[in-house]
Length: 157
Ligand code: HEM
Ligand code: HEM
Image (cartoon, rainbow, N blue to C red):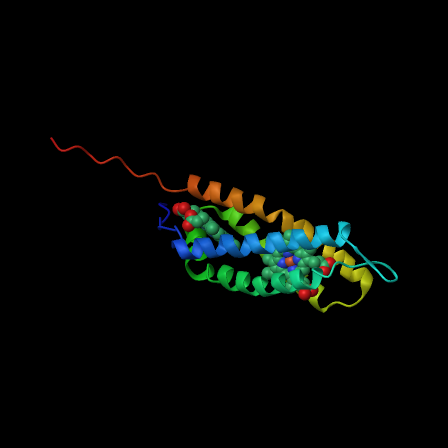
């Protein structure tokens, strides 16, 4: 059976909002990790957490909301039509899975207070987070590769 083919190219503003929110999440997440591990400040009673940490986490949390909105906007057209035309399904599904996992573990980080649970959520959250650029690049490359080839126009004699 012939598969339906749709134009799945996102409008430029939507594509760039995805890149922008992903980049800010990645930068603030990685900066938080580096400052938390390697940039303690000397306080009156010994090494203390870097004062930039809460600010980075606040920016990260705000942009996480924006990311969820921008990603959810992909559901009715991009994901639905991509799915029904069998284009880019595995990497699309992986991207959906990683995004949902990050949103869920992010919420768990925000609300959990038990230290042991928190450090476990933190580890799985940032490990999945630093894999996002790779998953996104695979999705973009495979998406381009899955475009239906245009038939060459017949020449009129
Ligand atoms: C089942 C889910 C998904 C399917 C089937 C799917 C399918 C596709 C396809 C077919 C393309 C290539 C469009 C083209 O250039 O002709 C594409 C590109 C793209 N996808 Fe997805 N996708 C899914 C989920 C996602 C998710 C969750 C995100 C982001 C969070 C995303 C972001 C993008 C971006 C940024 C592009 C490149 C921009 C573009 O080509 O317009 N996709 N996707
Ligand atoms: C893109 C890659 C990402 C990286 C590298 C990353 C990294 C991090 C790190 C290092 C933390 C701090 C962990 C801790 O407190 O121990 C964090 C917290 C958090 N992340 Fe992410 N993250 C990413 C994406 C996301 C996404 C997509 C969401 C949600 C959609 C999200 C939501 C959150 C939330 C809600 C918190 C807790 C904020 C708070 O406690 O105030 N993150 N993230």
